[in-house]
Length: 210
Image (cartoon, rainbow, N blue to C red; front, side, top):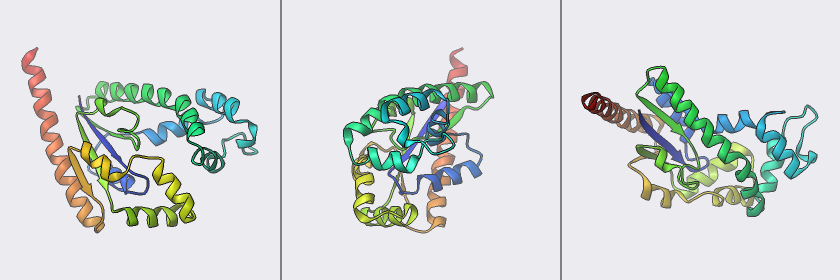
């Protein structure tokens, strides 16, 4: 199994790259989707989050008010780490389960879409790391518009992650998302083609060893 770790910063365009890969036939394992699922009412992380942060973070239907919880944890690093201590082990466990499920279905290449892949020390799961990069000013403006945030709120969320300038130091592939969608798509498909060739090489080498 060959694993691509797709990462970036908030509002860098990682979801756009993931969508391009999905359209190209990639098997995507989305950490955000996993995080959402494990925090639904009565799921494993839901109980621990409510116990730690109180019932004030719940909506009337029992779902976690993610906007409210985000406001709390992005203002206080200790509380953010408290939340991560609850969710991250569960997300990592699901990532491995999903990789194994993909392999059982016959896939030899998967994409892990994980925003905090490097920050939380999960880069060792991947055979190569793709970082989606944009300029700081572009990232800030996109986030403000996308989430209807004030500048101060947007900066706090960006600063809760490793800077993109630092992240690209870990990259095997850098996807520059400052230009048009077509320019981004061209980079993604070229890198995807190379990764598929590598995956075939890994699989072929594994078969030779058996």
